Amino acid sequence: MIVTRHESLRIQDEDEIVKIRQQARRWAADLGFSLVDQTKMVTAASEIARNTVVYGGGGTVDIEMVQAGDRQGLRLSFVDAGPGISDVELALRDGYTTGSGLGLGLGGARRLVNDFEIDSRPGQGTRVVITRWK
Amino acid sequence: MDAKQKALADLIAENPNTLRAAWMRELAIDVKRTNLMGEAELQGQCQEFLMRLEHAIRHGELEDIGAPSWTPVRDYLTEVSQRRANLGFSPADTATFVFSLKKPLFMYLQERSGNDSMLVEQIWQTTALLDRLGLYVMEVYQKSREEIIARQQDEMLELSTPVVKLWDGILALPLIGTLDSNRTQVVMETLLQRIVDTNSEVAIIDITGVPTVDTLVAQHLIKTVSAAKLMGVECVVSGIRPQIAQTIVHLGVGLGDIVTKGNLAGAFEYALRRVGMTTTPIRSES
Ligand SMILES: Nc1ncnc2c1ncn2[C@@H]1O[C@H](COP(=O)(O)OP(=O)(O)OP(=O)(O)O)[C@@H](O)[C@H]1O
Ligand SMILES: [Mg+2]
Image 1 (cartoon, rainbow over the protein chains, first blue to last red):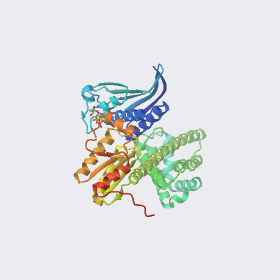
Image 2: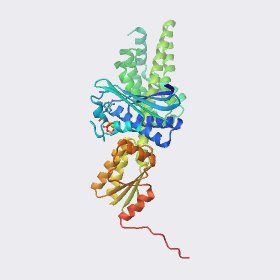
Image 3: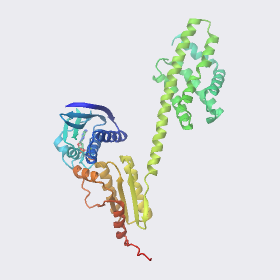
C-alpha cells in the first residue's frame, strides 16, 4: 500500500474536530467518493476525533490518501496519549459509555468504514485507524 | 547586573518626564491613527511602561523577557495591546508603541556616554531588548484580535439560530451549517425557550442544511425532542437527506418514536393537521 497524499492535524478542541470533518470531506470528494460514502467517512471521523478530544485528552490525526493495487482509499489514523481503554471489546459495544454519550461512536464508526483497527492499552493511549475504499 | 544595564536603568529613572515627552513626540509621528486614543491615556501608558521597564532592567536579565522579573512589563504590554486591539489599532501601530522608544533612548545614551565602544554595545543591547518587547506586543495583539473574532462568532451563532413561527402554534427551526456542540446547545435552548414564549404545540426541526449528523448531534436532537415532549409539544424532524439517513442507521442511532418527514413542506402539513387545520386548494372562480 502506498500513500499518495498526507497531512497531519492536531485535535485539541471542538473547532479542530470541525476542521478534520471538513478536510476528510474534501479529500473524500477529491477521491471521487459518492455523497453517501463521503458522509459515512466524515461521520466516522467525527466520532473518533471527538473521542480523541473527550477521552484521550487531545491528540493528532494523520489523513492519508492510500493506494493498494488499483484501489484508492482514505485512511485516517487518530492517536492520543490519554488513559487508554482497558476493555476494547466492551468499549465497542453499542450503548456502552463511561461519559454522557450514547455509547455508539466507536461501534458506529466501525460500521461506517471498511477497515477499522483499534490499539489501546491502559496508560498508553489509544490509536484508531479507519479506512474507506472507493 | 552589569554596569551598562545599570546605566540604562539610571537613565530612565533620572529622566522619566523628558524621555516620556520625547517618546510621545515619536509616537505622534509614527502612529498613523492617533485619533483613536486620547493624549491623557497615551501619556499614562508611556509613564507606566517606563516605570515598569526601568524596574525590570534594574532587577532582571535583558535577554530573557519571559523571566518572572519581567512579568510586570509583560502584563502591562498585554493590557496596552488588548486596549489597542479593541480600539482598532493596526498591528504595526501597536508594535510601534515599543519600537518608537528606541530613538529617544538612543539619543540619551549617546548624550551621556563618553566611551564609544560601551555606547555601541549598549545600543545593541537596548535595540535587541526593544525588539523582543515589540514582538511580544505583536503576539498579544494578535491573540486579542483572535479573541474578538471568536466573540463575534459567538454572537453570530446566536443570530443564526432563527426560530420562526409558521402558524399559530407551529414553530420551525431551520438548522444550517456545522453543528458543533456549542452551537447545538444554543440552538436547542433557543427552540425550547421560544416554545414557552409562543405557547406552541408543534415544533419542526429542519436539518436539510446540516452536513453531518454524528452521535453528538443525534443525542442533542433526541434530548430536545424529549424535553419538548415533556412540555407537551410534539417535534417533527424534517430534511433528513438520504446520505444522512443511511449514516444514522449505520451509527445505530434510533430516532425512536420521533416523527420524521422528508422535507419542510411535508412537516408543515403534518403540523397543521396536529393543530386542527387542513390545506385545500382554492377552487378557481373563473
Ligand atoms: N480515545 C479514547 N481514550 C480513552 N477511552 C476511550 C477513547 N475512545 C473511546 N473511549 C471509551 O470508550 C467508550 C465508548 O466510546 P463511544 O465513542 O462508543 O461512546 P461515547 O463517546 O461514550 O458516546 P458517543 O460516541 O455515542 O457520543 C467511551 O465512553 C470511553 O470510555
Ligand atoms: Mg464517542
